[in-house]
Image (cartoon, rainbow, N blue to C red; front, top):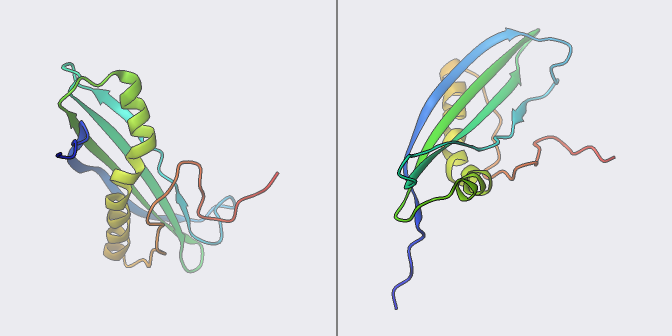
Length: 141
């Protein structure tokens, strides 16, 4: 008996935005690097209900010598296709629960490459990230 292929498949992934810049540090900036954990979201669903796009954005700040900070921003858009109609609630849930696992590995690489092009040593970003997790120690209530 052949295994059933999941009806939703990744068809395309692209960088929608990749930016890096240096700026002066402000008091609210951390003294160590910080990565904003990506929160995938549904961008849109095609009119034929057979494809949808999700977006994953992340921002990394790395303190530099003296009073500067380097910021890298990556926004990736993934197109997913299905041989079945995809209702809005399924597309939203799929984007929220699976989007980070499908797109984050690519976003990590782009952030790392932005840092290399800028001559900045970006600390390793986590391989996988769960929504709501953090890169710094958690604060307990």
